[in-house]
Image (cartoon, rainbow over all chains, first blue to last red; front, side, top):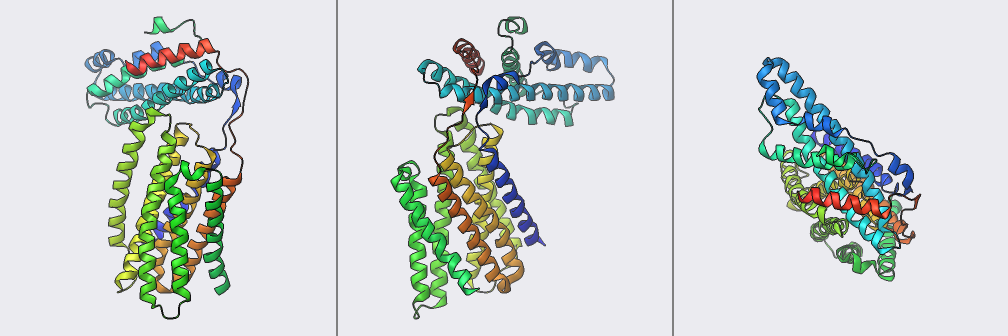
Length: 176
Length: 250
């Protein structure tokens, strides 16, 4: 029985490897179309969702079961915002990759840095989202641990930045 | 059937010799020296085993011990190649280093532990020590390779980063071979000696596919991704660079 389970695992791994390998060929594309796919993020709403004082206020005012439901929904909404930021970062990675190929060394160098920083943001999103899901499972476990709250703050700043991508002239100062 | 077995034993190694020559001519042996060492070792191992098999004086036990020793060295080299591929992925991407290295280290440890438990549960092949060692090595190395290669491919896919096509080719080749070996190594314990030939043929066919993939990627021209449109202006890009750097530094 156990041997059959491993045989099945091996076959599933084979299919997954083939699928992932196909994805590696899908590079390149229309940069204008890529830039148009960037999603605006409502930063003030996101900040409100992750505000610990707001959460404390709700905890004090609402009965425990109702608070649990609301806290869960707030975290799910925050996860959606972070995914939007992570998707924007994925687009920035490709825009950075394209800029790295530019013959102008200044653009190439700027693209390199953009690529590197967008990569960090995406990695960061992958670290924070599981913690938020943990918060969805245990909403009454108290406010976010210090490290998570710290992470929230970084993500807020990063979401602000990415949210501003489509509107470089507004949003940054008001959101921060 | 005998012809098929000999074909699947000899042909992939002839193709592997072509991979060796091609990678030397293209200078890829300097780019991935451990992979190069693996290819050289595989060819030496094939030569040794083939010679032993045609020598009438060789006992089956001696042949088996040489095969097990070769398999152990080969498994170790493949693991080293996977770490070499990960290094290739990390080149010029310093932010990945802090995440990918621990991921691979912990992944290897977890998979080893898991493989040890699984080997204890799986039925033994027989009373002979050499056969049982062969089974443990075959299963453990396949599980480690499949798990680590899947992690690497998933990691690069999740982050939307591209490898050079030659390194993708090596990873995919090893991945296909390792996953088929994992499935068949488990089945070998289920069917015992009666399934040896079928399992051997499947594993040799998987290695054949793996070498063909390497050859295709080796001789395909390296394609840089093609982009159309303007994308971001330099000033926009500098703006985002500054903002991102400020945010990452906090």
